[in-house]
Every structure is written in C-alpha cells, then in structure tokens.
Length: 178
Image (tube, rainbow, N blue to C red; front, side, top):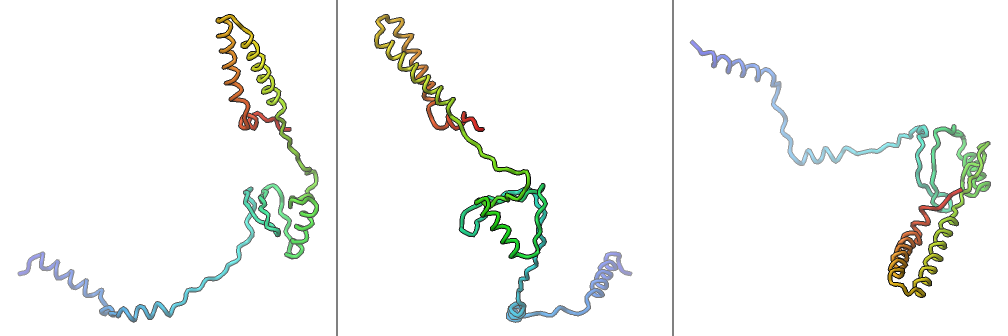
C-alpha cells in the first residue's frame, strides 16, 4: 500500500521527466565570446517624411553663420518644391528682398516697426528733480523749526520716490510702445 503523498511525488517526477526532451548543451565562455563577435551591428538610415507644422520656434544658423529664429507656421501652407536647387533659389531671393530671411512674398503682410517711448517717464523724473531742488532751496532759507522738519520730511519722500523711479528698470517697465 502506498500513501497519497508518495503518489503525488511520483506523478510530479513523471511529468517533469516528460517535459525534458534532451539535456541542454553546455557552452564554454570562449565559444560565447566568439559567437557574439561574429554578429555585426548595422545602422540603417530611414528617411522620414516632413512633419506637419505645429507652430514651434527653433534657432538655426544661416549660410553666413548668423543665428536666426525659425518658425513653422501651421496656418501657412508650406510651399513644396520638388527640386532642392529651386528651393535654395527661392530662399536666397527672399533673403535678398528682406535681408532677414523673412518671407516677403506673402500678400497682405507688411513689416511691423515698434518704437519705445520713455518721454512720459523722463518728464515725471524731471518734475521730481525740480521739486527736490525747490524743497532744498526752501529748506536752506527757512528759520522756523516746525517748517524745517516738514520740509525735511517732504524732501526725504521725494528722494525716496526718485530712487525708485530714476533707474533703467523703471524706465523699461513704463515704456510705451507704438
């Protein structure tokens, strides 16, 4: 009589032996190294189709080495030129026409010029400087202690305001562009 556990173990041995067809071949390390060295790795170039414009900006150097910012406009249909020489001629004619490589052949598009104006800021600073000079003049001629303290307080306030406004950062932030 055999126990159930013996039968289970015997069944496991039989099923494991049935799946093994032949013992695996043992290789040496030298054979493995030799097999790997015979395989050559090759890279192949697969040309891609031109991607659809998505509205991105990127820096690129032109023929003379100057850095330009390029933009692929998704709203503009791209001119597909079959001949690369023809594409170069069109690009050179665009550069000669505009000087900056911009496409001047687009109808209805004109060049925009922006001008910065800091006249208002300069007038404000000049006004504060004149007020400061007047207060200093008044302070030098005043004899009343109460009035002197009041003029000194006003003068300190004007100097603080001038310190905040009479600098390049304030001028840049308050420039009016037209």
